[in-house]
Figure 1 (cartoon, rainbow, N blue to C red):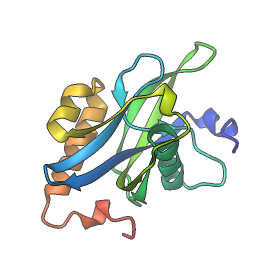
Figure 2: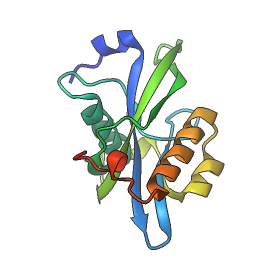
Figure 3: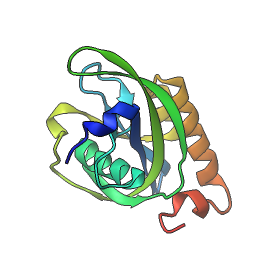
Length: 156
């Protein structure tokens, strides 16, 4: 799976994993590898996959979750990504909602990251990036709407 050519655009795709529980709406956060900040799974486009499929693949690789990825973009935010070389680059991250229906015990980056299911309030307290916080608030509003299927339903 080649991601090198796609990096030239500085676009990344990410997922906001979510589920409903008896306690209410929950979102899944992960830590970054280096700074251990709380974020959502994201990464470079994957050759041969759509933006939504790339986002879903990142969620599996980074958090061990699978589910129904939304077809509609939840939103985007700017992010400064540190490359392995140490160079910092500006990226635009496009986020798609992912309704989780499978959690795996093992996944590619399990040893590198922590994962945490959070209420919306807890997620907002954990996430430091203001733009990602705004997307979580937007998602919560959509999920609370009487008919949120247009953005939360992967078949829409």
